[in-house]
Image 1: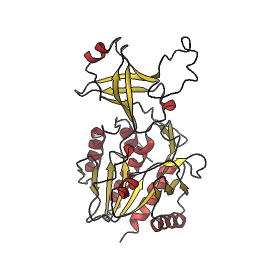
Image 2: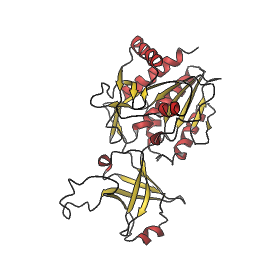
Image 3: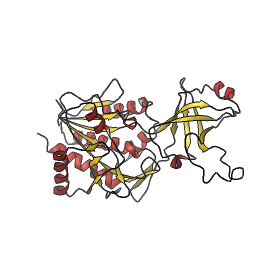
Image 4: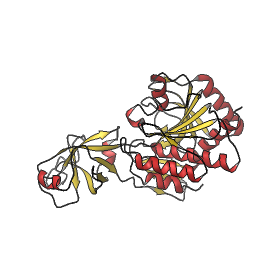
Length: 335
């Protein structure tokens, strides 16, 4: 499986609220395949694979990140989180600070007073937004120095994903949640084009999932079913793994549509697609947002298993392929 598009998409900074560059890449990629994508008012990318779509297959391109919340007197930055990153996993991450006038500065996310030779509590200190800061890679020692760079409150802080593809088939990176899901949508678009298929399906790349309202609006009015592609939870007590397609029966927003899930599982069993059924105890999705917004559609949730979610994540090409295979099998059964 050629992961070029996954690699390129992950390299584009797209924390929630700063997704235009990634959305442009997605739209351009779909256009290069011969499709005619459009953008919603909230910036999501939507593309029909055929006329009068009855099924929407969705993934979110927005990621975790941070925003400048204040400038400290010593020239470091306070920050507020975008989404829910697991801060201990992001400690020492390299970051990029995007200013309103288009400048980009680099820095590092660190504990306050991080040197163990000056702070013997550094190893046990709690990691929170109140105990951490951004160190800017510029000669700054005051708030005035930082302001002279053009950095201000509200600027976006994006984390270097540290993406790697391994010969074992594993892929490790920040933000596989949910750019691995976006890659699944790219594969669906590519396969439908190669096979001459024009199913009644739209692909939907949302932009505000990490803050809970990505799927609240923007679907085509003819859509009857939503198939959400998002990361499968790997960890105790879940039964899924990085090498399978995870099928979610229930998350914190309640159960997904029983009949839709039943049909997906039957197809996976029929076709020998590696899969696991799970309940995610601390999770929600664009499907949850759609239902809460009043969208009258059946919703199911599947996706490649992702280990260490919202931290230093890892998945496997087999889990990605299984998700593509299950999605395509469902599409092929549409009438």
